[in-house]
Image (cartoon, rainbow, N blue to C red; front, side, top):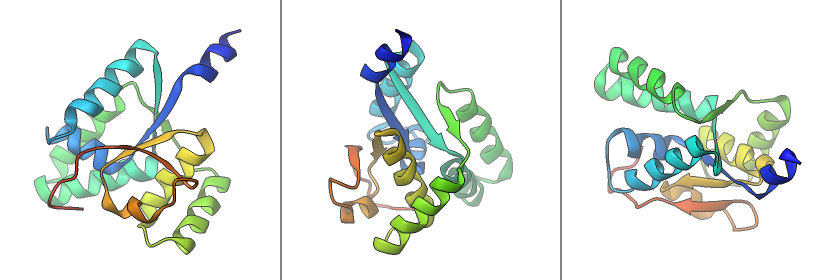
Length: 148
């Protein structure tokens, strides 16, 4: 019976845009915060690919240094988010997506994970605009002027 309840819970995949939006308290951080509360309460499932966590780590390290980047990773790992190690299937699916669409390889991992989980991808990254709705469902975050 527990499985039936899980089927009614929405799945969301966070990408680095969503993580950075929240960590930097940018416009849209409140959307990510609400999803974190819902995941804590068990009303949604949140997922994150290790690839996108690594992307977030290097971006913060470039901007603020290794110590702050490591602290951000520790913080994220304490969130109610299920970290997903890429499987061979996800690696090849990300390769298929990258071959067909002009998005970053890290973004292709977020898409492949969201597709596998029938999840919404939480992002404001304009790179995803090239993907048709049948490829990915987006829960949009507000856009920022600077992109990563």
